[in-house]
Length: 100
Image 1 (spheres, rainbow, N blue to C red):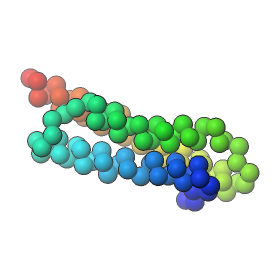
Image 2: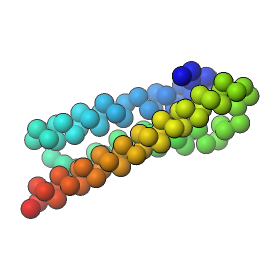
Image 3: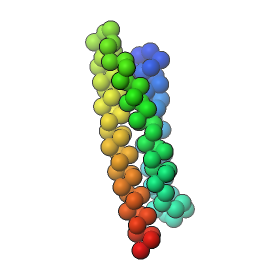
């Protein structure tokens, strides 16, 4: 996967922190070190959302290689957004479980 140009580099940089940070938060929540808070999960979902938004205006790439890299980053951003929704659901369940 080659992130060509500054826009591709920014998109890739925005996609990198979400998976490890979300897993770290879920494990810390599971061990009881932090309380379940929806705001943290939503704040972490901003990274892949921004990456997806950065890819929208730059759809017209000059080379086929650039288009393929852009499509790959877009697909990765969508997968990470789906993971973010799963994390939000997990945090919601943990918060309700804690209240009951």
